[in-house]
Length: 284
Image (cartoon, rainbow, N blue to C red):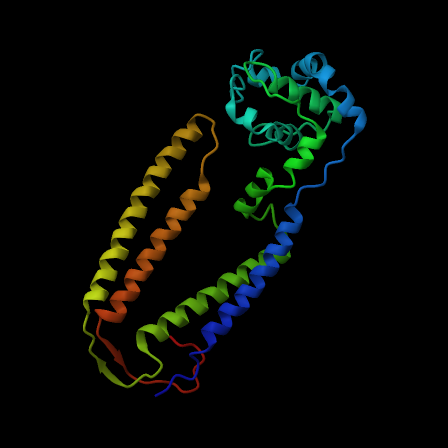
């Protein structure tokens, strides 16, 4: 008996892809960085401000309480000899203006004070950059992908998205689940279903595929555990954890196990068809 709904999983996946494109458009629009306005007055004073005004702001704004008078760290991370901020000076501006983790943003600082304290950090405690951090440099950095934007995209939690995005994300997952299960059902059971016992015989290729998928599942499990151990150590040292890799390894474990189950169902497990309802809309 020919299945009357084998095409429906593809329709679901195509609809999910269209909704996903709309979702990315909405989400990226909200997380895009605001254009930086280059103020000539600020640029003119940056070079002479950071040794005096920068040090003053570092003390009065409370930076010294968390990072230490010599940038040695404390409640906040160590700033002395920090190669990361030297290689990416714009990162300092982003953290001062937007905050990160336990460090709050400092909206009370004027633009002049922000660049003064940022350059003070970038030129002190063993840190040194060739050219001072300027609004033009920040604007140039935002022509690339802003690290803060990447962080927001990867978090994907309700506090970062609104109701339309939540609805679309949920519906995309429902459609993808329906489509994947439907395609899996058609693949394992075929376009036609005949009542009775269906005997299957494994092939060398199927056996190799089963070994490879189970091996990959074991490999990703080991990598997941190693990443968890590394992230736990980073968290204890108040460093940023790599949650994206944790999620990737976990997803690959589930994917490879799913492939192994599919191979087993297709090539190693006998099936039985009792009856096919011609009016059904779900292939499983």
